[in-house]
Image 1 (tube, rainbow, N blue to C red):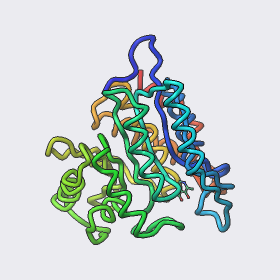
Image 2: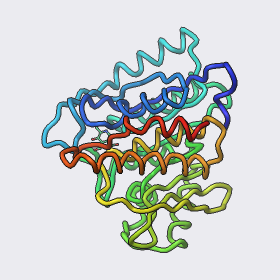
Image 3: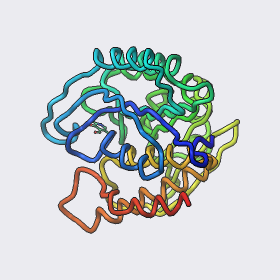
Image 4: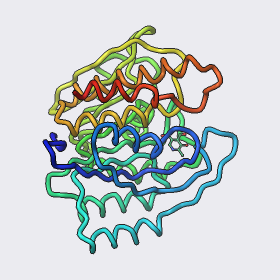
Length: 281
Ligand code: PXL
Protein backbone atom coordinates (compact mmCIF):
# COMPACT_ATOMS: atom_id res chain seq x y z
CA UNK A 1 0.00 0.00 0.00
CA UNK A 2 1.34 3.43 -0.94
CA UNK A 3 1.70 5.35 2.31
CA UNK A 4 4.58 7.64 1.34
CA UNK A 5 2.90 10.24 -0.90
CA UNK A 6 4.24 13.57 -2.09
CA UNK A 7 5.08 16.09 0.60
CA UNK A 8 2.94 14.62 3.38
CA UNK A 9 5.16 12.79 5.87
CA UNK A 10 4.02 9.24 6.56
CA UNK A 11 4.26 8.27 10.23
CA UNK A 12 4.59 4.68 11.30
CA UNK A 13 5.10 2.97 14.64
CA UNK A 14 7.39 0.02 15.18
CA UNK A 15 7.35 -2.17 18.28
CA UNK A 16 10.45 -4.24 19.01
CA UNK A 17 13.30 -4.38 21.49
CA UNK A 18 16.13 -1.95 21.95
CA UNK A 19 19.28 -4.06 22.04
CA UNK A 20 21.88 -1.45 22.88
CA UNK A 21 24.62 -3.37 21.06
CA UNK A 22 24.14 -5.87 18.26
CA UNK A 23 22.64 -4.33 15.09
CA UNK A 24 19.16 -5.76 15.43
CA UNK A 25 15.60 -4.66 16.10
CA UNK A 26 15.24 -0.91 16.73
CA UNK A 27 18.87 0.01 16.01
CA UNK A 28 18.28 -1.46 12.55
CA UNK A 29 14.65 -0.47 11.96
CA UNK A 30 15.10 3.22 12.81
CA UNK A 31 17.97 4.03 10.44
CA UNK A 32 16.53 1.92 7.63
CA UNK A 33 13.03 3.36 7.84
CA UNK A 34 14.44 6.87 8.18
CA UNK A 35 16.47 6.25 5.02
CA UNK A 36 13.19 5.24 3.36
CA UNK A 37 11.80 8.69 4.20
CA UNK A 38 9.32 7.54 6.81
CA UNK A 39 8.85 9.17 10.23
CA UNK A 40 9.32 6.25 12.59
CA UNK A 41 7.93 6.28 16.12
CA UNK A 42 8.96 3.50 18.47
CA UNK A 43 7.56 1.31 21.20
CA UNK A 44 10.56 -0.42 22.79
CA UNK A 45 9.32 -3.83 23.98
CA UNK A 46 12.40 -4.35 26.16
CA UNK A 47 15.85 -2.89 26.70
CA UNK A 48 18.78 -5.30 26.50
CA UNK A 49 22.45 -4.58 26.98
CA UNK A 50 22.98 -6.47 23.70
CA UNK A 51 21.10 -9.14 21.75
CA UNK A 52 20.71 -12.66 23.07
CA UNK A 53 23.24 -14.32 20.75
CA UNK A 54 26.01 -12.87 22.95
CA UNK A 55 27.03 -15.07 25.89
CA UNK A 56 25.34 -12.78 28.44
CA UNK A 57 22.84 -9.91 28.42
CA UNK A 58 20.62 -7.77 30.61
CA UNK A 59 16.89 -7.71 29.84
CA UNK A 60 14.43 -5.11 31.12
CA UNK A 61 10.85 -5.86 30.20
CA UNK A 62 8.92 -2.67 29.38
CA UNK A 63 5.39 -4.12 29.18
CA UNK A 64 3.98 -1.89 31.94
CA UNK A 65 5.42 1.25 30.35
CA UNK A 66 3.98 0.25 26.99
CA UNK A 67 0.37 0.33 28.19
CA UNK A 68 0.96 3.79 29.74
CA UNK A 69 2.53 5.05 26.52
CA UNK A 70 -0.37 3.72 24.47
CA UNK A 71 -2.88 5.39 26.77
CA UNK A 72 -1.06 8.72 26.51
CA UNK A 73 -0.81 8.45 22.69
CA UNK A 74 -4.50 7.81 22.48
CA UNK A 75 -5.44 10.81 24.61
CA UNK A 76 -3.00 13.06 22.75
CA UNK A 77 -4.62 11.96 19.49
CA UNK A 78 -1.48 10.49 17.85
CA UNK A 79 -2.37 8.29 14.89
CA UNK A 80 -0.07 6.17 12.73
CA UNK A 81 -0.20 5.19 9.04
CA UNK A 82 1.30 1.70 9.56
CA UNK A 83 2.44 -0.68 12.28
CA UNK A 84 5.48 -2.94 12.11
CA UNK A 85 6.24 -5.35 14.95
CA UNK A 86 9.39 -7.38 15.51
CA UNK A 87 10.94 -9.05 18.57
CA UNK A 88 8.47 -8.78 21.46
CA UNK A 89 9.46 -9.13 25.10
CA UNK A 90 6.79 -11.61 26.24
CA UNK A 91 3.36 -13.03 25.46
CA UNK A 92 1.51 -10.17 27.25
CA UNK A 93 2.87 -7.74 24.68
CA UNK A 94 0.98 -9.57 21.96
CA UNK A 95 -2.30 -8.28 23.40
CA UNK A 96 -0.80 -4.80 23.25
CA UNK A 97 -0.20 -5.13 19.52
CA UNK A 98 -3.92 -5.76 19.05
CA UNK A 99 -4.73 -2.72 21.22
CA UNK A 100 -2.36 -0.60 19.14
CA UNK A 101 -4.20 -1.57 15.97
CA UNK A 102 -7.57 -0.75 17.48
CA UNK A 103 -6.63 2.48 19.22
CA UNK A 104 -3.93 4.40 17.37
CA UNK A 105 -3.79 3.29 13.74
CA UNK A 106 -5.52 5.14 10.92
CA UNK A 107 -8.31 3.16 9.28
CA UNK A 108 -6.37 1.85 6.27
CA UNK A 109 -3.03 1.43 8.07
CA UNK A 110 -1.28 -1.81 7.06
CA UNK A 111 0.12 -4.06 9.78
CA UNK A 112 3.44 -5.85 9.15
CA UNK A 113 4.30 -8.60 11.61
CA UNK A 114 7.70 -10.23 11.85
CA UNK A 115 7.17 -13.04 14.39
CA UNK A 116 10.84 -12.74 15.38
CA UNK A 117 11.32 -15.65 17.77
CA UNK A 118 13.32 -18.43 16.10
CA UNK A 119 15.78 -19.42 13.40
CA UNK A 120 17.60 -22.51 12.12
CA UNK A 121 14.99 -24.83 13.60
CA UNK A 122 15.22 -23.39 17.14
CA UNK A 123 13.50 -20.79 19.31
CA UNK A 124 15.71 -17.88 20.43
CA UNK A 125 16.85 -17.96 24.06
CA UNK A 126 14.01 -16.81 26.35
CA UNK A 127 11.05 -17.92 24.21
CA UNK A 128 8.88 -20.97 24.87
CA UNK A 129 5.84 -22.72 23.48
CA UNK A 130 3.46 -20.38 25.35
CA UNK A 131 4.98 -17.49 23.39
CA UNK A 132 4.51 -19.37 20.11
CA UNK A 133 0.86 -20.03 20.99
CA UNK A 134 0.35 -16.33 21.77
CA UNK A 135 2.07 -15.32 18.52
CA UNK A 136 -0.42 -17.47 16.60
CA UNK A 137 -3.20 -15.18 17.82
CA UNK A 138 -1.51 -12.28 16.06
CA UNK A 139 -1.87 -13.78 12.59
CA UNK A 140 -5.40 -12.39 11.97
CA UNK A 141 -3.97 -8.92 12.60
CA UNK A 142 -1.22 -9.27 9.96
CA UNK A 143 -1.69 -7.70 6.54
CA UNK A 144 1.76 -9.06 5.82
CA UNK A 145 3.45 -11.73 7.94
CA UNK A 146 7.25 -11.92 7.54
CA UNK A 147 8.43 -15.22 9.05
CA UNK A 148 11.49 -17.30 8.29
CA UNK A 149 10.91 -21.02 7.72
CA UNK A 150 11.50 -21.94 11.37
CA UNK A 151 8.90 -19.42 12.53
CA UNK A 152 6.42 -20.50 9.84
CA UNK A 153 6.80 -24.12 10.98
CA UNK A 154 6.30 -23.25 14.64
CA UNK A 155 3.22 -21.15 13.89
CA UNK A 156 1.61 -23.88 11.79
CA UNK A 157 2.85 -26.86 13.87
CA UNK A 158 4.67 -28.19 10.82
CA UNK A 159 7.82 -30.27 11.51
CA UNK A 160 10.88 -28.17 10.55
CA UNK A 161 12.72 -29.25 7.40
CA UNK A 162 15.95 -28.15 5.79
CA UNK A 163 15.07 -29.49 2.36
CA UNK A 164 11.69 -29.18 0.71
CA UNK A 165 10.04 -28.35 -2.58
CA UNK A 166 7.74 -25.61 -3.83
CA UNK A 167 4.60 -27.57 -2.93
CA UNK A 168 5.76 -27.76 0.72
CA UNK A 169 6.49 -24.01 0.77
CA UNK A 170 3.10 -23.25 -0.77
CA UNK A 171 1.35 -25.43 1.82
CA UNK A 172 3.21 -23.62 4.62
CA UNK A 173 2.13 -20.21 3.30
CA UNK A 174 -1.43 -21.42 2.74
CA UNK A 175 -1.59 -22.68 6.33
CA UNK A 176 -0.43 -19.28 7.66
CA UNK A 177 -3.14 -17.56 5.62
CA UNK A 178 -5.73 -20.09 6.83
CA UNK A 179 -4.76 -18.99 10.36
CA UNK A 180 -5.52 -15.38 9.45
CA UNK A 181 -2.49 -13.74 7.79
CA UNK A 182 -3.58 -11.82 4.67
CA UNK A 183 -0.24 -12.30 2.89
CA UNK A 184 3.04 -14.03 3.68
CA UNK A 185 6.60 -13.04 2.81
CA UNK A 186 8.64 -16.10 3.72
CA UNK A 187 12.41 -15.59 3.93
CA UNK A 188 15.27 -18.05 3.57
CA UNK A 189 13.55 -20.26 1.00
CA UNK A 190 16.17 -22.30 -0.82
CA UNK A 191 15.55 -25.06 -3.36
CA UNK A 192 19.21 -25.72 -4.17
CA UNK A 193 22.66 -25.22 -2.63
CA UNK A 194 23.69 -22.10 -4.53
CA UNK A 195 20.56 -19.96 -4.35
CA UNK A 196 18.16 -18.82 -1.72
CA UNK A 197 15.27 -16.39 -1.84
CA UNK A 198 11.93 -15.11 -0.67
CA UNK A 199 8.51 -16.65 -1.30
CA UNK A 200 5.61 -14.22 -1.54
CA UNK A 201 2.12 -15.61 -1.07
CA UNK A 202 -0.89 -13.39 -1.68
CA UNK A 203 -4.47 -14.12 -2.79
CA UNK A 204 -3.72 -17.83 -3.10
CA UNK A 205 -0.80 -17.18 -5.48
CA UNK A 206 2.86 -18.05 -4.79
CA UNK A 207 5.74 -16.01 -6.26
CA UNK A 208 9.44 -16.38 -5.66
CA UNK A 209 12.43 -14.05 -5.80
CA UNK A 210 15.68 -16.03 -6.02
CA UNK A 211 19.15 -14.64 -5.37
CA UNK A 212 22.65 -16.06 -4.77
CA UNK A 213 23.28 -17.59 -1.35
CA UNK A 214 26.07 -15.78 0.52
CA UNK A 215 28.02 -17.85 3.01
CA UNK A 216 28.25 -17.35 5.86
CA UNK A 217 25.01 -15.46 6.52
CA UNK A 218 24.96 -12.86 9.28
CA UNK A 219 23.08 -12.52 12.55
CA UNK A 220 20.26 -9.96 12.48
CA UNK A 221 19.60 -10.03 8.76
CA UNK A 222 15.93 -10.87 9.38
CA UNK A 223 15.48 -7.45 10.98
CA UNK A 224 17.37 -5.69 8.19
CA UNK A 225 15.24 -7.51 5.65
CA UNK A 226 11.90 -6.80 7.35
CA UNK A 227 12.68 -3.10 7.90
CA UNK A 228 13.72 -2.58 4.26
CA UNK A 229 10.68 -4.56 3.11
CA UNK A 230 8.33 -2.35 5.14
CA UNK A 231 10.04 0.81 3.86
CA UNK A 232 9.76 -0.37 0.25
CA UNK A 233 6.14 -1.51 0.64
CA UNK A 234 5.13 1.86 2.10
CA UNK A 235 6.41 3.45 -1.12
CA UNK A 236 3.71 1.56 -3.00
CA UNK A 237 5.83 -1.30 -4.31
CA UNK A 238 4.07 -4.64 -4.77
CA UNK A 239 4.96 -7.29 -2.19
CA UNK A 240 7.19 -9.06 -4.72
CA UNK A 241 8.97 -5.84 -5.68
CA UNK A 242 9.42 -4.88 -2.01
CA UNK A 243 10.73 -8.41 -1.38
CA UNK A 244 13.26 -7.96 -4.18
CA UNK A 245 14.43 -4.52 -2.99
CA UNK A 246 14.81 -5.76 0.60
CA UNK A 247 16.66 -8.91 -0.50
CA UNK A 248 19.15 -6.98 -2.64
CA UNK A 249 19.79 -4.54 0.20
CA UNK A 250 20.31 -7.37 2.70
CA UNK A 251 22.69 -9.14 0.31
CA UNK A 252 24.71 -5.94 -0.10
CA UNK A 253 24.90 -5.65 3.72
CA UNK A 254 26.16 -9.24 4.03
CA UNK A 255 28.79 -8.63 1.33
CA UNK A 256 29.98 -5.56 3.26
CA UNK A 257 30.15 -7.61 6.46
CA UNK A 258 32.31 -10.30 4.83
CA UNK A 259 35.02 -7.67 4.35
CA UNK A 260 35.42 -7.50 8.15
CA UNK A 261 36.13 -10.99 9.47
CA UNK A 262 35.83 -9.83 13.10
CA UNK A 263 32.23 -8.64 12.71
CA UNK A 264 30.18 -11.71 13.74
CA UNK A 265 27.17 -10.30 15.62
CA UNK A 266 25.31 -8.33 12.95
CA UNK A 267 25.46 -7.10 9.38
CA UNK A 268 27.05 -3.81 8.25
CA UNK A 269 23.93 -2.40 6.58
CA UNK A 270 24.98 1.17 7.42
CA UNK A 271 27.50 1.15 4.57
CA UNK A 272 24.88 0.31 1.94
CA UNK A 273 21.94 2.48 3.00
CA UNK A 274 22.63 4.59 -0.11
CA UNK A 275 21.76 1.59 -2.29
CA UNK A 276 18.40 1.21 -0.59
CA UNK A 277 17.62 4.89 -1.08
CA UNK A 278 18.58 4.57 -4.76
CA UNK A 279 16.40 1.49 -5.19
CA UNK A 280 13.40 3.41 -3.88
CA UNK A 281 14.01 6.16 -6.43
O1 PXL B 1 15.55 -10.48 15.51
C1 PXL B 1 16.66 -10.90 16.10
C2 PXL B 1 16.76 -10.50 17.53
C3 PXL B 1 16.15 -9.35 17.99
N1 PXL B 1 16.24 -8.97 19.27
C4 PXL B 1 16.93 -9.71 20.15
C5 PXL B 1 17.54 -10.88 19.74
C6 PXL B 1 17.45 -11.29 18.42
C7 PXL B 1 18.09 -12.52 17.96
O2 PXL B 1 18.82 -13.16 18.60
O3 PXL B 1 18.23 -11.59 20.64
C8 PXL B 1 17.02 -9.26 21.57
